Length: 496
Image (cartoon, rainbow, N blue to C red; front, side, top):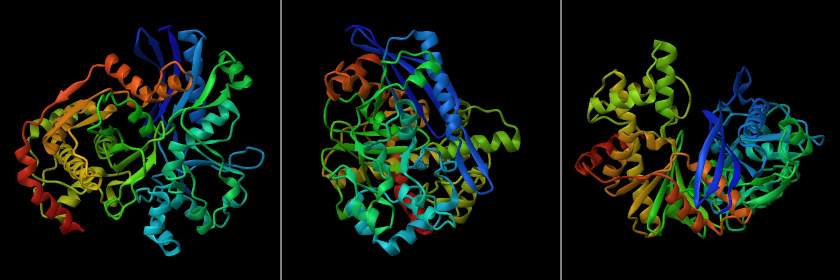
């Protein structure tokens, strides 16, 4: 294989990075060249993304790519978190700072939506898990503003779509990212005009949806000049949702597996070729998001490592603690079994701030054992996550009628080896961990396939398995989760 080079941007809620992927000798190597905190702003009127500061970091990454790897790149791709968007006026001016999905403006908006269209009808037309952060509820909140920016907007672009627009000049929406909105029909892989009309949203603002892997065109001359890159580098609408990219990276060589994309959010599911919008899927709040090669990611969003990240931030700011994540996980390991758990679906854990106090408050409300040391609190969160994974894994099997033999975990969360082992114990099945840079690898894979360098998704997954070290975890202590499942479920029922 002739050497080919790609640029991939992977933006998470906590940080972003620019990486160069080099394909050579049937293997992929990754090179991180720029990392940055994802800029956000808390103002009196809300919690926002500093989208132009993010774009500045994109340009910086491109400059460094040129500096360290010359100029013969095949293409550029961007993936980010879902649901958040930028509004543009007819002159392509940004209409205000885009909102952060953790802003409080969506509180109670799902209930408002259900007064207009029933929960069942929304699910039948969008097939998306009900979360207050979804774009639909953000837009309904905007409609209630004194100055409703939807009335003056010309286009709505999700975060990666907007960044692709700045690089390519094309205002299009890639399917995997659009599907997170609760406004896309998963059967037609297009906007659900029925829902858009029912909620009184202006149809003209919604751009054309394109499939992942669409070549948007070459980099704009102005961007090429600003970064000193060649003008013939392609901009690819890759799998622009980071989870969709992560799933492309799963090094699975058979069909009896589920995936877990582990990071700030945990997303567990399977690949299917047709949406699943049954009553059981609705009751269990599963989602049907867009995938690559005409697939659907049937999955569930789980809060993930966010509570651990928030605990660390709280202890750093309030107690001047300098413990890193690995040290906190070591404390949790030394603590031993927690025998206390929280319901991570409780809305309090979604919001930023005072996370250790929220955990302790929940334990107090449910009359469980409480300790205030760091290791105990982190252990409570980790075991609660493992129980959540266990429940979700079983529900996937129940809804689909498919027996799953293993779980593939990709993303930064695999570095939390305590959680990974407890996941194998909770699921009582083999867990394959790796690669760490799942979203970046999938991002590059879609670029390579779209440019005809790799044949298809199956071939890409073989290449991934050949390129990166994978670690297999076998169940060791399944009895802990078997014996405490009833107690855990009773705690959830008691609180609800």
